[in-house]
Amino acid sequence: MYSFLESPTLRHGPDLLTFVSAKNGRPSPSIGQRLNAYFVHGTDDGAFLRHTAVVAQADDGLTPERLRSADYLRTTSLVPIFSAAFVEALAADLAADLDFHPCVVRCAGVELETFFVARTKTLLPLVDAARSAYRPLTDGSPMLVRPTFHEGLADRFLIARDEENRHLLICTPRFEALVRSHDLAVDFTPAE
Image (tube, rainbow, N blue to C red; front, side, top):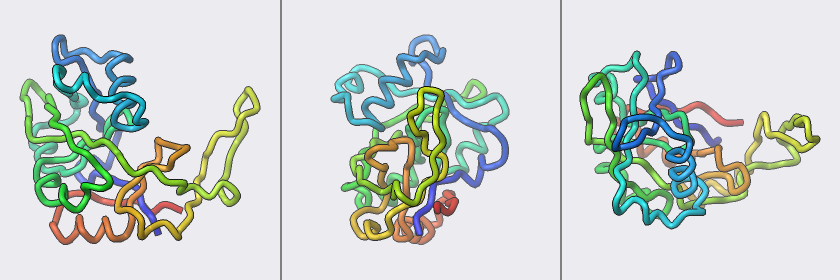
């Protein structure tokens, strides 16, 4: 059974982080689009990372202490953020599935430089379209509302995205076991 990542520290409520400009600290659609193009969709070469810092701003309800105690942070985009402890413990195991890049997290006037954004390298046909639920959009095209996954691919990855539905970041039981064996503050929600 596959699962989705959750943050035990930030699980309750809308606590999220938003990617912002490193220069002026304001969110911008172009920042989110560029990060998603590289880290999620693989349509950008990532050259911008050589001269641009990745910065995420925490919601007002968060504190630096809460962020420091989390090993996974939810964002308003599809790009996951992991702690330095997570990367140190699992980067070698996840080398086939994820690339990590430093990220500064700003919270309540404090800059936390102990986080990393992750680029998903493993893209697989994980969604079983025949067993999944869809609803029609106004233009008649289908929108996935309840995905069901092919189980037979679990031995090919630890964490991956569905190749068509890139918003779905899927974890295997082996990934969960690795996270738990290192006592990292990451929770999981079962996927169907």
